[in-house]
Structure formats: C-alpha cells, structure tokens
Image 1 (spheres, rainbow over the protein chains, first blue to last red):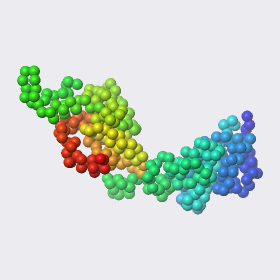
Image 2: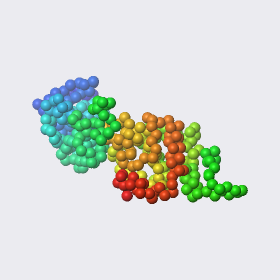
Image 3: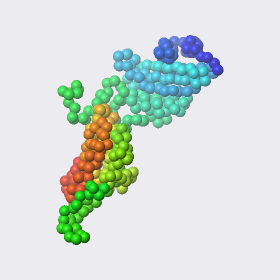
Image 4: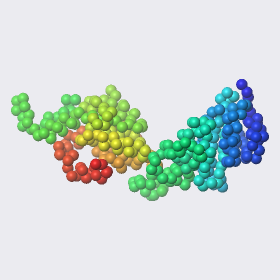
Length: 167
Length: 178
C-alpha cells in the first residue's frame, strides 16, 4: 500500500502539465486543484491512469456558478484512490456563457447521470456524452435552475404577494 | 361499523323499509369506500398511522386499500407532488372509474406548502379537481379521519345523477379531462 501525499500529487501534476495547473490548495484537509479548462480531461485521465496515483473511482462531479467571477461557470470533480485512501478535487472554470466540457463517460460510465444532472441544472454541454437530456426536472422546464439568476419561487402562485412574502 | 350507519328515512313496516335509490346507494357507497393512497412524503407516514390499529380507518368502512386506480373510489393524495409527478397523478385520476372523489391531505398537496419552488406543483387542484382539503404539515391521523368523514358526507348526499350533470362535465372540462 502506497502512501500518497498532497505534495507528491501536486509535484506529479506540475511535472506533467506545467502551467495548465493554475492553483492548488488544501480546503478542509481536501486537496483541491484548479486546472485550465482545455486540459481538465487530460489531468483526470492522468490521475486515473497513473500507476501510483491510481484515482480509479469518480466520487462525484457537479456544476459551479459564481456570478461575481469573470470566469463564472465551472465544473468540480472528486476522485478517490481507495487503495491508498487518497482523494483529490479538480476544479475548472470558464468565461463561456454556454460552456461545453469533455465527457468523462468513456473513463467512468457512472459519469453519465452526473453529467446529465449538470446539464439539467446548469445547461452545460458535454462533448461526447451518449444521451445528454434532462434527468431530474421535467422535460418541459425552461431555463437552468441552479444558475443564480434563475428565480426559485413558482411564478404562478397567486396567494403570495409582495406585502407578505417580500417578493 | 354499525354505530356509524344511521337509519334511513323512508316508509317502514315490520321487516321492510322502502326508501329512495339515492339514499340506499349513498349509504352503501359511503360505508364501503376503497381508497387509493397516493403517498409521496411525510403525510403518507401519518396515513400509515391512520390505517394502523390505534386510529384504524377500517372502522369507517375504508378497510380495503386499492392499489389499482381502476378499482378505487377515493384518491388520497398525501405529500408533495413535483411538477414532474403531475402527469402521473393526473393519469391515476383519469384511470379511476366514476364516481370518484379526491382528498388532498396536508399543506403540500393542498397548496405546495413550504415548497414554493419551480419544481413543485402548487396544489394538486391545478391538475385535478379536489373534493376535500385536509390542512396540516403533516396533519395528525385525527385530521385525516375527519377529512375522510367529510368525504363520506359528500358520498352519502351525492345525487345519483351528479356525474352526468352538465356542471360536473364542465368541471372536468375545465381541467381538460375528457
């Protein structure tokens, strides 16, 4: 059983990808690496394929929206090496208003539904995804609910007015 | 159950009672409702207590739950109905044979409750007609029983011809049903 430290992982990533690794930090004991968008799939594939890092498990992924940033949209991925109990979080951001990311379904089939979820709630496209359509919301929904500008309240509810509910 | 069945009005003699068909049918229907529980969240848990021994909905002749809409008289909607679930609920309602009644149990089924959000239906009466609303979040079993008793009142006093009446057809048409 190997013992992978955060320093080792960062060193390996920096050696392999250089300036594509934008920043790295420890957030609540969780190694978080921000990567340039065009290299994010290569970085993930490297983490997956590297014999020592061996991040064989995709824990989760989700969309991000920070409207105050110039690069407001992004994706977050969490990978896990269960053998060495090593975890890493990969973030990537883009200024594109209609972002398109590379799919991970060819590495992990389990990425299928999570990418559909990111599409459903953020409107992100995934290049190479086999069947990108809404997964949780109704098909007739218009808009992307987890983008910050989306109004959360039901617009058709008549019994709540501004006076009582601060709308 | 016999405690709940009051004597029918009519012409009575030794060993017989003559009454109107409406009253006889109303009495029979009232005391043999087959509810279809459409339980999606915590109100459904309260409904389980309502069916269990302490409260026992069976005392009111609604012992037999129907899990097929085609054999049910009373649709009990208990819980949050998301907009994605809406068409499913509507299909269940459409599959029920007339006469049929709907009981909306709890704040969510009635108005959407605390879920004032884009994904939740703001009351099932936006897609199907509702006969009785039970408030509460969730309502206690006593309240659900009270709602069922209110339904029983409607069932007993409903005219035999109501379901063919223009008013009723108009109500259905306003929901786009048939």
